[in-house]
Image (cartoon, rainbow, N blue to C red):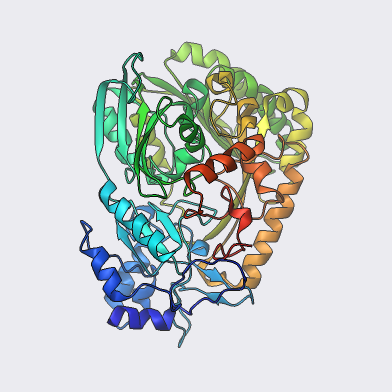
Length: 568
């Protein structure tokens, strides 16, 4: 086929570097024949996918096609609609062990070819659980590397894999409401109002649908709302601006449907497959099976109050005073159920938070002392205040209207650490000083504490340090598409790793948020899953004894080589 001839040019075959059992990778003799793929296609609801890098049209003869790519390259929804393509371009590239690179830059140098990078060359456009089952059977029969992909919002590369076999769940968009949901096999439970979201539903779609029913659901907040609502977000724990009021995503899940490595279609809840239910709530995506839907508890769509503040600092000393006070008051704000996001450095401070179901007068009592401190310390250039929104969706739409276009389509790696309530209370000045010493500033996500801290840390696989935390600190390194050389990427990774080690001197147990993390952790098991790791490894062996599902820094990945193609 012409397509496979093209792939033969842009996709250099991989060779095994291990003597142990290895996956069958595209370009090897073991790769399934076109007859085998045709047989698979006959059993699917959609034609097979032949994914290509996002910028491939810019290497052809159509200026119009390339112009369209350039217009949309940094649009998160456009990228999420491309099978196999990630949101950040560094995750679409592939660096070989010899430090050469396979990539497809948006602005190619004359004579440069488009490399397939880490984008899988073939896959299934799964629209039904039966499609997923067929894909799993095929992958297992031919010993393929399985890559589960929805929107491409992932910093660890769990949704991509060079030479792998893609299972794309992006168009599993079913949404259903239950006025009185009772989990399967629960014979005594009381029904609750719930929403079931297909694996491809994105938060912007979920929020609009649930708003129409007069309810809200605990979910993610991102520019454009393009993060998947029933994929990696929830499998990695799922934090939210609503978490201080209603708990984390994992605390609001009632049921999963998923396909396991033996192609069984399971219902998983607290009563049916309870160990797997525990593992899926925070144990990481792409590891225990392929989720086809998630059912969430919903809450009344109450009004909320939003607070905002922004200022510039004239001196580092003023920055230190403001950051110290912000950290000092954080525990009280989270206890009052304020949640949201802030950015600060030695030069500026920005904050926006929300609290549901309180009056403006009540909300003002809790934040006005900090606003007054901010104005007195930073000067009259400070802007701060409160706004009332009738519903959560109104606030979401307002925030998205204020923010710039989608912040994707370039190279970026992130790292995170948790800020414990105890640390904020005992060491606010020391913590502020350390955070302000970081060269690129920090994001302080107020997505913990409050109601989320009252839940048993062992109730789910989510890192137990989250139950003692009040915020997540995130740092990042970014670079442009034209700067994506191996040297620049390695230097950025080294800087991020060094900065993360600095954070470890003040944060909680070196714990990170699994979904906003770096591959270059000193001990990913400790940082991502902590004391839950041993139990997760046992459950992994029970449900996937042959390790069909292996992802970077996922449970069991330490048993594989760096490329995840061969067992050690």
